[in-house]
Length: 178
Length: 236
Image 1 (cartoon, each protein chain N blue to C red):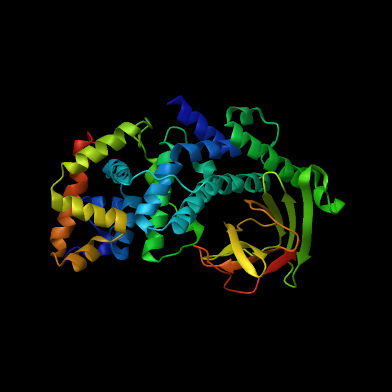
Image 2 (image 1 turned 30 degrees about the horizontal axis):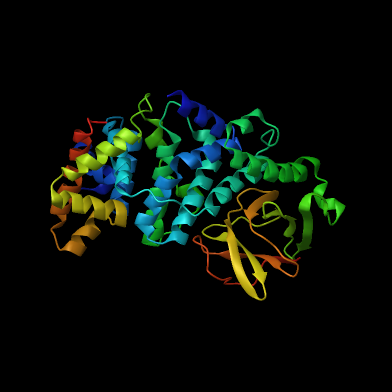
């Protein structure tokens, strides 16, 4: 995916125009995700701004062969939005995702959050059992840990745990094991 | 907790059970720590990658929402001073700029020109009040802790450029910028200061004579009104 490679390379050398391009590519998704999690425009904008800021400062760690920067940005937005919702604030060093998780990515960056994958993800999600959908949503969008879901719903902890596991593994299988 | 398991030494099989929740950041802190420990010593869990990608794809379930218009300039505004601080050449006149959108290019060239003038030539601050090109020096100030701020205002597009020297690094707090007009503070946004030396901050905002530009230290999400005495302030 040459366009992504080019964007990553320009981000690595901190070309400000590349940041603008990344913003144009992903800002509607990033803002929508932050809104869904924190529920308020000003707080969502802060999350998005700080996520771009984090990515920009860590841009020298990006690698063209290891996933699209849009995917990384959304992962940072998710992490930060969840932390904001949980009332956690960390210093910036700890606020990003594990680099290791991205450094082991497959060589082909295309599995990462293309529009096709997004569409497939929505469709596949709808095919999961309802109780798994509910728990994945609570974990992903409400930032609840699985034991907190158990306390809130009154479901046994092991039930919640197995639904989280089966839900995510099921989704992965439907997405072709990507 | 996993029943009857010493979390500090998980077996591969136990880690495999926990990985989906780990990929979703849904484990308790001790479990998360134990899994991370295990992963740092064990190369048997490449499935984490696909679980992460699957978890990330859950973002698709959030609707896309148009962010506020000012957010783009604020995000891209971070780039210029940071680029300057990292000593990345050249901010202005790069052929790369021509690939960008016209609106961005305009913003970049204007903001870039200002910052480049400040950073590279280092003369813009020293010439006093300028009225050519709709730019003016709002003022400069220094506090007893050795931090200083100089503020430049560009009329078109309405942009406030601040240069800070000697700002303390913050953890778990941010600096928030305010324009105070008729005793009412309006925020322009927040920034982190995590580099030593000069920090240039470019923000969208208009100024009138009599307005005060001030910065305060605030919680990470910012505050709706200043929660402390301004660290630095100058009046236009």
